Image (cartoon, rainbow, N blue to C red; front, top):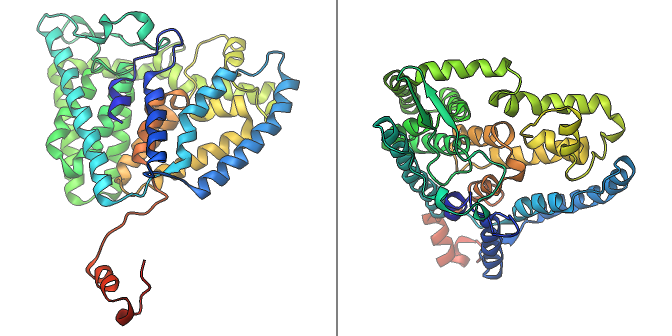
Length: 398
């Protein structure tokens, strides 16, 4: 998980494949061979059914499109999500270790993001060591650097990205998740994450924070509700002191502006999907095939960041798209090792805030955090007694 976070910008030279994805598979194979993870029967059943459905869809793809399906697109997505067929025997200790590893990793990166932004406010340069690498080592197609105008300060800055994240937007979402996950066990880290989210200048992180706060408001304890309210207040104070408040309110108008970042992420994917449904009803069952979204983007005349469900439906049809969406949402929501607020943030990140379907960093994070099928094991005194005295207690030995 740590390598997938800090290495998410890096690509293997010459082929452009994300380094994190290759390392992910090396870890999966190593864990499987070592007996640390196993194939899940229920997930394997779903995966086999999905494979049969894809084989049936192949006929539709060949009939509906003059271009052959993109094998690279299909293989790339499969490489991201096939590891979800494997599960690990989860314990409370393992869950705590994963949570702690994530929080400390992103807290260090949040501190780096704050330093990046703070140095610029003080008149210094934008610090980014990854930018020193040759372009062949960087995954193309992402906005690693984005500018930010702050009317309150009258300055033009570069949005913090923690050096390692694909985009400032991705950094803000990871920091927002860190804030929500740390509220219960490491509340002292919350201010760090809140400030880092704001310094990325990204609305997606603020949306993720809002989702988490709503989750705590609905289901959290009294302490969590108070802390989440204080976190919101801290956010407004930082916005006021840094002059970012005007920028945030100005960006809210992007939802009504064509070609804006908000439209690109939240409006256009669904607009393209509805137009696809109306224009190509014959393709609703099978979709256009892997890589098919490039055809809809070209037909409707604008670039778009296709989110999880719209991309699945356009390329693989309504049955597969909805089935995968429901199964993934259930997988996240059943991960009781995470507070409900954090699960809601993960749902928002996966289905609304980014193109998670083709992002190894998102898939790896979900795989590490959401191993819901295998229940936690807790050794109790009664269990220990039953094992020591199997005949007297009437229990079978394990």
